[in-house]
Picture 1 (spheres, rainbow, N blue to C red):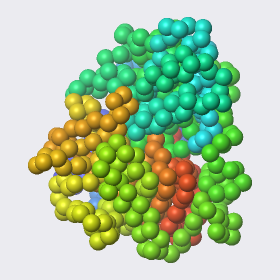
Picture 2: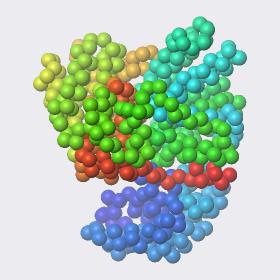
Picture 3: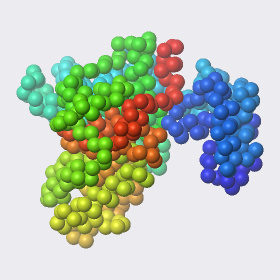
Amino acid sequence: MTTMKDLTDLHKIFASYFRGAESLAYALSRKLSEGNICLDTGEYQKDLPTLLEQQRASESFTEDDARFWPAPEEFARQCQEGPFVTHSETGLKPFVIRGGLAYLHRYFQYETRIIDHIARLGDHFRIITGGPGTGKTHGVATILARLHADNPNLKVALAAPTGKAAARMNEAIMRFAGNPGNTLDDPARSWLASLKAQTLHRLLGYIPDSVFFRYNETNRLPYDVVIVDECSMVDVALMAKLLDAVDGQSRLFLLGDKDQLASVEAGSVFGDLCRASDSVLLRGKVELKTKSYRFDAGKGIGRFSAGVIAGKEPDPDDYHDDPQIQLDYNHSSALSDNMALLYRQYIEEPDIRTALQKLNLVRFLCVTRENERSVREVNLQIEKLLSRQVEGFKPAPSGFYHNQPVIITQNDYNLGVFNGDVGLIRKEGDTFYAWFEDPETGVRRVPAGYLNHYETVFAMTIHKSQGSEFDNVVVILPEKQGEKLLTRELLYTAVTRAKTRVLLQASPESLRKCVNRAVSRASGIEKRLKNE
């Protein structure tokens, strides 16, 4: 029986609908909320006695709750073929168990579609992965120029998960087209420069108030080549829908950094595919770029980020007087204030397009949105500092204010703004407008009053920073609240958002926890590909 107490645990409410399989349903629901696609039933069965003891220690635990953490034998029984469980790839039941991995049916189908589509595309499917500045976009632009030389009518789509990432993709293509060091002729340069990236949702044709897209398995994208950047940000559901929409005669290139944080939603599909590069299906289709043209591997950001992802704790002596990396174990307000005052430049810039560019001179990156050393706390501190130091800057306690930087926190298909897009509020007459970079028009504006889901963004979470670059970055790690989120992928992602300089404010213990803990998300893609 579900009690009022259970209303605080949505997983219990969900599981209660599956009488006789409550434990399996509860485990899958909770695992999915933690970013996992599936559950290793054998490992979970071994953990059940410990999990039950942990739950019994809770004041809210009742004996009725024990059904969610039963004896291992009962859990094994629930995993057998039954009213809610199928062991068949084609079975139509809520839960699918294959190869010792349990899934919600929908997520098993997402994985299956991804694998089937990769097989369907054959040699037209390619992955290019590498860290910042390793030439991923340069490499694919070279391929595009060659394909265009063979076919002047080549139709190409460029896309990225967010508007910011799409704008960066445009910048990279423009730099390549304008580089006098390459061998392109003028028509090829003009053609490349004419290509415009868009958000992945816009490419697929979002339908308001729907989880479906206009382009799909029965109405495929009308392009010869489709290139998607920042694919580590793409969750398993969106990846399946992208592959649904790619025609078998089209070439698909997926670009990204396999070492970055996985998507906010469930799965780590891009990393899973890269780790399965030696499988029969992917052999020869995954290109790993290791040489960085942006960072020196022997010092600064290049050395630090490589050490972090390898699980090597940084030695403070190695970064003493380093021009790119500054380790601040004391959370010095003087150091962070100096960085925050770089925001003065966008505030004092009258041209909106230039102001949006100057907004990227610095960004503060936090682990959590609330509590200790969080986005909320740091945003308030910076607002107070700028209100004292910058003439005319007057933040409001609620609502919009002139020169307020904002980040969109939820997709709004009607407005064409998406989770992670960053904009700038400016007042014209009596009306506040939100200005955003636009991959096609440069900038665009919407009345600020139309925005329903947004936050101030002097500081942002590290997750939200994916797909962005800033000249200077301040990374702030918590000591207690949020420490369970500290991983090497989190720190690597934060540090590599910087082009020039990083101020890392963290205690030695928090830094140690980051470096020694790796993200672990359960997924069956790698295992299934290697067993194909």
